Image (tube, rainbow, N blue to C red; front, side, top):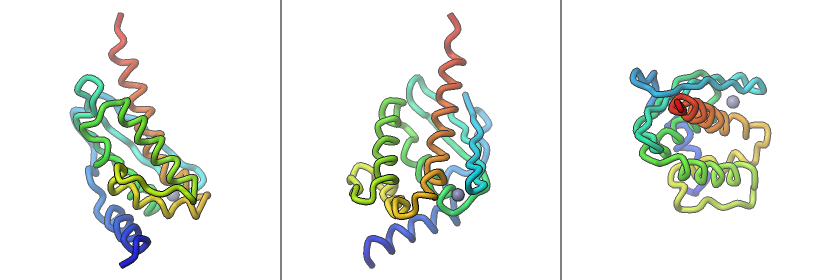
Length: 147
Ligand code: ZN
C-alpha cells in the first residue's frame, strides 16, 4: 500500500465514521461555518479548561473532505492549548496549499489531508472546520472578558 492509498483510506474512514460527531451539551462556545463554494456546513462546539480544549465535537453536512478534515481536527486538538492549535493549523494550512510540502510526523493523521493540495478548489473544504474552530475560540475569549 503506498502513501496515497493510506491517506485515501484515512479520509474515507473519517468521512464514514466521523469522530467526536454530535452536539456537545456542556460547551463553552460554538460557531457555525459555511463553505458556499462546495455547500459544506458545520457546527463546532468546544469546552475549555483555561486555554486548553477539554472537549470538542462537531456536526455538519458536507463533502467527504470537509467531514474527514473536521473529524481529524477534533482528534488532533483535544487536550491542546490555543497556542499549540494555532501552530498546528499553520502546519495544516501549509500542507494543504503547497504540493511540495511534505507532512511532518508531528501532524499525525492530519497528514492524510496532504492530497488536497492537488485540488486547490477543495482547500476551503478542508480548512472550514479550522476557521469555525477559531471563531468558536474567539467567541469564548469574549465570554470570559468580564472586567
Ligand atoms: Zn466540500
